[in-house]
Amino acid sequence: VDRAAFLKAATAAHVAAAAKPAAKIAPGPPAVPPSMRTPGAPIPPYGKPSIFEASVVRAPRDATMVAVTPLGAQQSAITPSGLFFTRNHAGVARIDPAAHRLLVHGLVKTPLVFTMADLMRLPSVTRTHFIECSGNGEPLWQGGALASVSLSHGLASCAVWTGVPLRVVLEAVGAQRHAAWILAEGADGAGYDRSFPLAKALDDALLVYGQNGEMLRPEQGFPLRLLLPGWEGNTNVKWLRRLELGAKPFGEREELHYAELLPGGMSREDDSVMQTKSIVTDPSVGDRLGAHGDYEVRGFAWSGSGAIARVEVTLDGGTTWSDASLEGPVLPKAFTRFTRPLRFDGAPLIVGSRATDETGVMQPTRKALLATRGVFSQWHYNAIAYWAIAASGAVTNAPA
Amino acid sequence: MRRPNFFSAVVLAAATALAVSTLAARAEIGTPATPQQIRAWTTEVLPDGTGLPAGRGSVAEGEVLYETRCQPCHEAPIAPALFGGVGSLARIPTKSVNSYYPDAPVVFDYIRRAMPPTKPGSLTASQVYTLCAYVFAQDAIVPESAVMSETSLPKVVMPNRNGFMLAPNPQSSAPLPSASPSTGPAPLPRGNRP
Image (cartoon, rainbow over all chains, first blue to last red; front, side, top):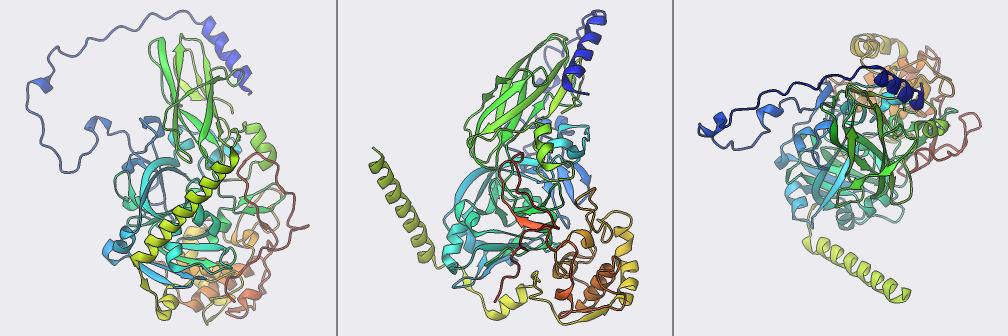
């Protein structure tokens, strides 16, 4: 089913349906609510979301391995630490920071061991960056339709990270001239390890200990993780214990696992930059618009190559597009929130967004993506996605 | 107009680099690692077999261990397939250890590092060699009589040994370099220590 036919059929059904009576207006709350007649609760030492927000949680797809961010409920570009998506390979490691060490060795002049106290004395920076799992939207390659925007796009989140530029630590150990790759190893039950090019380390890599103003959450690698801004999540090794410099890729299991299988059978390694992507999170599949009138389309856009330059929104399934407003500051390799007014009068709509980054790369259509990648790719799915808004206001998946 | 901008950019970059290295050098932060520390921490096995420990194991021994420690998950299938699918990657792919991994030492490395998930690091080197032998024998990559060790494992010829290329590509729908495992590019450089 293509989107035009889908929209046409939905519109015909809408015209055929008799005009419904307006919903009866429910009685309002009392003029003086109970909260004005009773003293408030004591202040909790560590604040939690309102009990009325209890449904806004990460959806575990697996108790220890994967949990997705509820993107449809995210109110700004920053993902709350407790809702940040998590992908582990051996559960959440429990590490005492006083006993944690980072060894930096291999093709270096002076191999060094750092305590957390050592690392926290080094010059520090704070940066806002998204992390996206390369498997975000994996079922979509083969045309799957998922029940929520969390399940289809929620293996991506964005936070404010604090730590040491990796370059500073590499200067302390002194990389040898023929060093070109670095193996990063975590202290979890998988001994999770990945190698990446030295050039990325010298560019913008960070050794991170802070997240959104506090120390890292255990699920994000407490007390220390690697952050390779814009690169697929699995390169951002958590519970970081060791960095080994070498001359070539280390060829570990994880870099083979996350290589991109192409039509023809070859697999592409070092395909780590997450490409331009955007998604309308509000409204999204599973929502229902109520009364006719004014709404706002909201969503997030990001690119592993730099800042978002433009986001366009369609209300007719991709026939016409108009610019969305980008909410500043628009930062490189970070979520950018976008909005656009939406008028819903009961006529069916098909809503979607497409982003373009500062390097000029536009988010591809599904057709263009599949033309070069086939359907067996698994990783880096970033095609334009659409939601259908029916005459009833119900929001469902629309063909991409 | 370009020259002053370019010049000040260079000066700024140099000043920044100097500031950073001065801070790192002056801080004298971190403790020199001893060779013993480095040896004890460096557990990875490289694609050319560097780092493989002494040990040996047969296909038959591996079968017994596989059935008790691996099969419950790997044929559930809670965990990915370990064998089968050889030659399938260009058509409808079945990725398994035998169909997908380009070299044998990485299999040893991963089993020893992460398996079984309930007790990672609990298998002896010889037990890991038996499991490698058993897995490879399921697709006749090695004969049933094979014994895997630190000398024989790196010599195992994996079916997909030419199936990987290094190809960074920041645009997901851009044209891709054309190659196939049969026509194949040069194998990736593997192994990191002299």
